[in-house]
Length: 118
Image 1 (tube, one colour):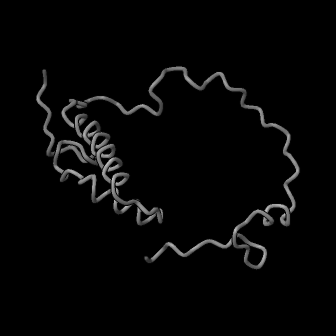
Image 2 (cartoon, one colour):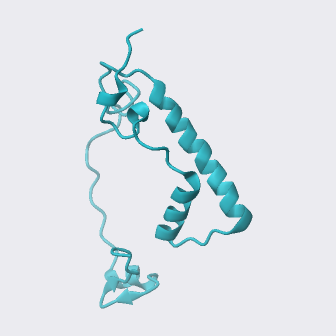
C-alpha cells in the first residue's frame, strides 16, 4: 500500500491537519444563526448526535485517496434516464396570492429579519 502524504492534501478536513470541530460549539453557532432556542436535554442530545456525525466524517481522513479522481456522482449511469425535455411553463401565481401567506410583507415583497452582519 502506498503511503499518503497528508500534509500536501488541501481538501477541507483531509489529512488531519485541521483541528477537530467541537460539536457543542458548532451546535451553538448553528442554533444562533438559525435562531433556534436549544436548551437542556435537547441541546445535549443534539450535541451528541452531531458529535457522532462529525466523528464519522473524521474517520474518512485515514482513507488513502491519492490518485483517485473525484466523481460528480457516485453511481455510474444514475440519473441519466431522466427525460430532459422541458415541460411547458405554468402560469405564475399572482403576487397578491403569494404575499397573502407571508408573515411580514413589505411594499409588495417578502419581509425577512436581518441576518447578515450579526
